[in-house]
Length: 215
Image 1 (cartoon, rainbow, N blue to C red):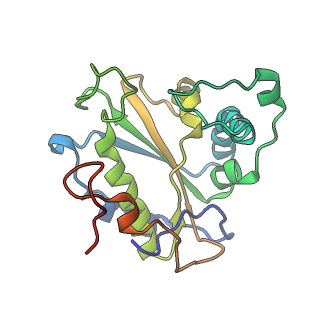
Image 2 (cartoon, helix red, strand yellow):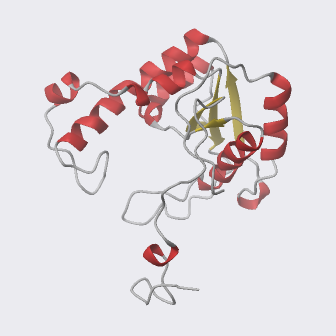
């Protein structure tokens, strides 16, 4: 957990099926809501398909970068964007948003069956985050299992904005929501020290505004 970083640059090494199978076989033991196990993983190796999926995420990434440059919180539902569409369209995006999907030897497209998710926040007056959330332990398990094998990857979501096109490209039924696209490969580098906030900076006792939790 202390060394599983977001890998976005990969060597030319392949990720053999037997290693990927071992990764997925270990990852499948992640918990899910009601043990319904509603996730589906589509393994994409075809270079043209991977490139197309990267392209489908580009418009969302363009808006993300344009909003960042304007000092906005990208794609935030509480703070609508004031960046004009023509500015968004003219914004160039870093390779980090596209290259991982196109260049990784394997791209996993994780979807979740909407017929088995419990959306407990569906009637609250805010954007929903609970429905389907239990698919993400599986996604994280995949990254941990990949790290254990000397591989790595990252969770990407930009292509979700073009979900209908992703569904058509991969034959995903409309009863499934796309939850993440996970490129996997052999990282160019293997950092072992990650910078994260200390526990006391984001954990409190008893209440949200309670004292910092310090062991």
